[in-house]
Image (cartoon, rainbow, N blue to C red; front, top):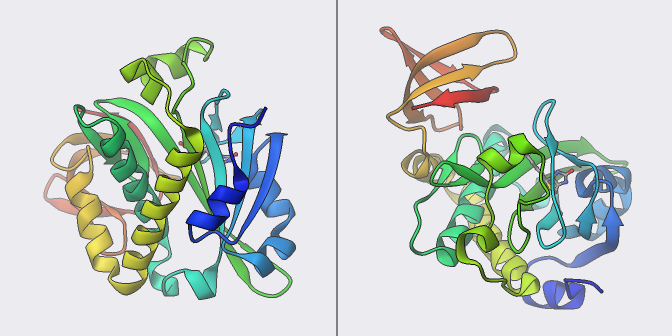
Length: 260
Ligand code: BTN
């Protein structure tokens, strides 16, 4: 039995085509594989009930179970994305969209983003986003992969995931209609994408306001060094601003290891 009604998704959101499979290794990987076809029907969505080899940012993997939302939104980078210099903000915009949805579902909790685009409830991760850009035979696509823990329990998750992650079900004891939640997520995403195209600075500023790290001590592994400092917020191009001694560094890629 599918948890989703794909025809409802295309009827009630900006998505024009849904590539639905009951089970997949990774929705992002299938989106990359089908990139030439999906480019032509974008905005498209790759959706599954059960993902067995989810990819995370960098070297990380993404654990998920049935009852979670695992999907990838595929956009024509030129038609649906912002100007090239604002493309890094698409990932932040997607995080803000997921944050807005989670805050509606969990009105009694503190819901924040964590640069670049995790969503945290308190300090527990509830949503991860993997955004990628790829060339196709006739243009280029943006893939926004979203993993959101909704009706799934974390009981069967590996220890290190269980310790730092949560789900809507874990926090409320209640299950919600997954198609309705997905539709709301995509409608928030459509709004966030409109904003990043029209006013990218507003996306960066909203991201700084909503970020768990702003004002806190952070340890971060960049591709070349391990840095520690105070997070001052997010620059207009989406970089994390880290004050180290008297200098302010702009971090464009990195993995946050610790924060206070
Ligand atoms: C992260 O937090 O490291 C990013 C996790 C992104 C997971 C989602 S689940 C749907 C999509 N398909 C994947 O293989 N990964 C993303």
